[in-house]
Structure formats: structure tokens, C-alpha cells
Image 1 (cartoon, rainbow, N blue to C red):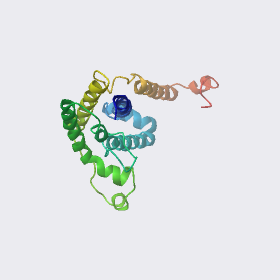
Image 2 (image 1 turned 180 degrees about the horizontal axis):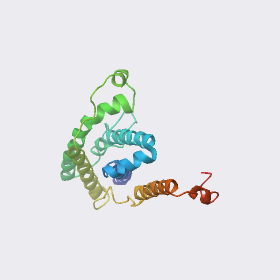
Image 3 (image 1 turned 135 degrees about the vertical axis):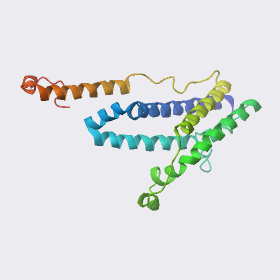
Image 4 (image 1 turned 90 degrees about the vertical axis):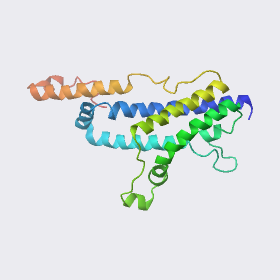
Length: 212
């Protein structure tokens, strides 16, 4: 594969890493912030946020596996993964570093791949009906995955394009923060409604999104 093609592949892979890191940060900001935030989410829409929590987890595990899938799924079925990137033309030094970081990524993949195979990408009957232990890993092991992914991206981007590439660089602040701010206001609004007689009557017809 020539240098132009390699650059295109690395750019596309970096975009996928940014997307996954962004989704993981949304999850952390919503569900791993503190206990007070967890209580807020449960009070406002407990069932919805419980389901959203599970959906986030499934999607993150799926994407982590996808990025570390085999290089190919068959003839003319190349996959945009770390293993495919290893097959591109690299200097010996870069190749050795990429292999080292990929080994860390694959070590984490081994902890979650059964979840992907049996409960996320497919619905294995035995796994669904029985209490089976899948996807157990520590916070430090996941942190190691993200560190290795960042290092892998930096190595590939530096040689193929030039300079490191931060997979968190394009994340914009405010999305989850804005949501949480609005949820806090909604709880305060409910308190006002319950504490002040005639409050809802005075607000009748004034809600901007009454038909939303």
C-alpha cells in the first residue's frame, strides 16, 4: 500500500478512535461523575438513564473490539483495525512500537471479546439464559487500553502524516454539562411547583416547548 493510501487509512482510523473516546467520555460524565449525579439521573428519569447506561456499555465494548478485530474477514474484506494497520509499510522502529502497543490492546480485548460475540453482536442462548461471567476488568486495565490506543495512534500518525494526534482533541465541552444543568433546573422547578400555590396556573400557556 503506498504512502497516500496509508495516510488515508490512518486518518480514518484516527476518526474512529476520536468517536469512541468521545462516547466513552459521555458515559463517564453521565454515570461515573459522583453519587449525587447518579441520584439526579435516577430521580428525573430512572428507567431511561438505566437503559442508556447499559446501551452505552454495550456500544463501547463493541467498538473496542471492532478496533482490534483481525485485519481481514475474508477475501477483499479488509477491516479498519490495529491489526490491519500493522500490515502497512512502516520503519522497523515504528513497526516494533506499534506491535508493542497492539499487544496491550489485544490483552484488553481478550477480556471483553466474549461479551461482544455472545451478548452484543449476537444473542447466544446459553449466555442469555445463564449467569455467565463476561467482560470483567479493572479501571486500571481499561485505562491501560486507552493509553495504549493513544500511543498506537501517535506512532502511526507521526510516521504516516506527521506529529502525534490526540484522540480527545476534538471533544467539545458542554454537551453533558448542559444536559445536567437543565436536569438540575428541572428538579428545582418541580420543587417550586410543589411549594408555591398557583405556580402552574401562572405558567399556563407560557412554556416554550409545551408541544415538544
